[in-house]
Length: 187
Image (tube, rainbow, N blue to C red; front, side):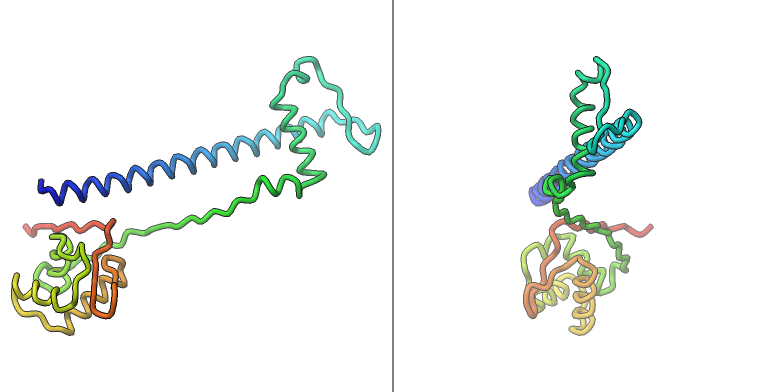
């Protein structure tokens, strides 16, 4: 394993660790939210089943066991607030959240095609730094047959649209850091 490969794997590992930690946080929030909703529903059901209509606010008698159950008391108060003064709780509940789903696109290309040869340059980390169109063209010519400018332009554009490269300026391209290039040897 080369030093560059080790560094790339270390970077990839860090990204995966961050993604995993974020997923853990989201799962914990979802579980807590779900449990709170269940508790509110239970408390509301308990409160409505044991209610007596003596005045405009409902009153209920509690057993000795129930009067020491702080969680049930809290959920009952919260359920009542949600019914009588939802604006007070809305401040606590509203939190913006942005969720982005990323779909990994796979492109298959013949190794000798312009697209396949550019993919090999990406795999060889030639495009880790921003490169000019002319530099990419020279590297392809250095490592194989001459490439038509138009076919290279089409291949680069396709890789930009597919999310494998970014177009840094009019004629500069760079590989996207967290994508994977896999070279499959033909049998």
